[in-house]
Length: 255
Length: 278
Image 1: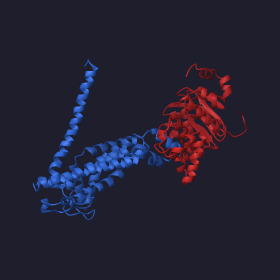
Image 2: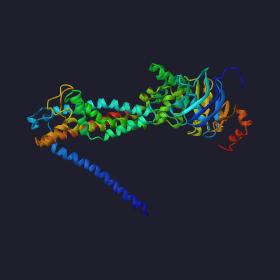
Image 3: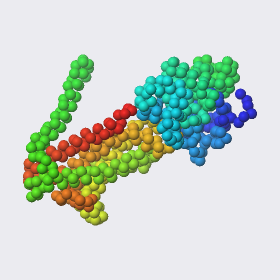
Image 4: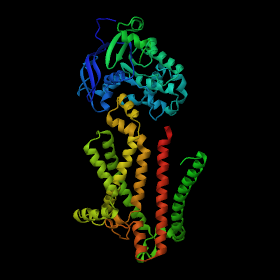
């Protein structure tokens, strides 16, 4: 995928420490617009931490220190001067465990949008419908938008979380093992939505499920112990990996 | 203790049941005792008339007003201060020496006998700041007294809000303050309310801290600077000076009923507010 375009996200020489322990070691990778980048690797390889650096959610916990550069849309996202609120709206995040807020389905979907200044109930209703449709949840909840989001099933909750992100009109969607707690049918529905969403968004999908990366990712990156072992088109990573460790991992020899 | 687990289960159940039963019995006994002696004295006149002849005759209307005014004042001052402190401790700072000092201070404050608060309030508000025996002095003193309870219960309540809510809120582009007001506080509300209700109970029944700071005037308070007598103080004086035991019990019955009512209303309001989506 070598192109002349500027990548949407450019990571160079990026390292992350939690107090004195190095979690990420000199990462270098690009994320292209409108691709699904899968990130695989065993637990503790730094996948989630990397994702949390991208939307600066890592700031919520004290003791982290980073070095190197991450540029998103031509601007650095590191350092104290970055408007993290704006950054987080552009990089929507979906967590491993779906966390609907204790509000109605409707209120959950428009939660972020309301804060970013989307006014008027009619406008918000339209926004909610559009977002829920894109997340593939509209038909299941259209009759009960005012019910508590906590009554939804796990799979529905996770699609609600995706809809909640979409309502913010982000550029990038970060997914942190979004289907790890879901059954195969719910997982299938989410993967389905992701494929559709690729047309309009750039997606970074961290997953513990190697097969999931094979199914949905355009390119796949393999993380191991905080290092990027290999990144490339998914088909090549899964058929002809350059690094023997990648081969060991995807063929299930460890991890 | 080896042996039959079913037998053990039975013993444990019996012991715990007895303990619970004893707790409820004690409570019922006290309430029944007061109401049996006090309720016959309570009438519409008793509730709405001014006391006469030091409280031997007449009603207790001014002490009801005084009690409600002082308690309201204490809650209105202490709740924002306490919840604000709790928010600072939980959301706006990491654990460090300062937070430990604040927490330790709050715990010590909670253990100070109320009469010392009374003395402190007397010296600071009544004499030094020249507020005199007044609702203001008494309310301020009470608010200091209940502050630790409100801080600690609010802190616990805020801490028990899942960290995931904060992450979700932040990831959706909320500032810290928006996260606190829109996500954390609504979820912590039941716990905070419990702390406030406990504090109302403490203020409403307080005598020592109040008698030094709000005085014991039997007139209806007309401003924040009026001296006022609370029901608890009235009861204390009537009983202690042997003025009128029947009226003392009547006052106690009204006091107990008031506390009960405030608790019921608070819980009702809280449930109405939180039931919707949980």
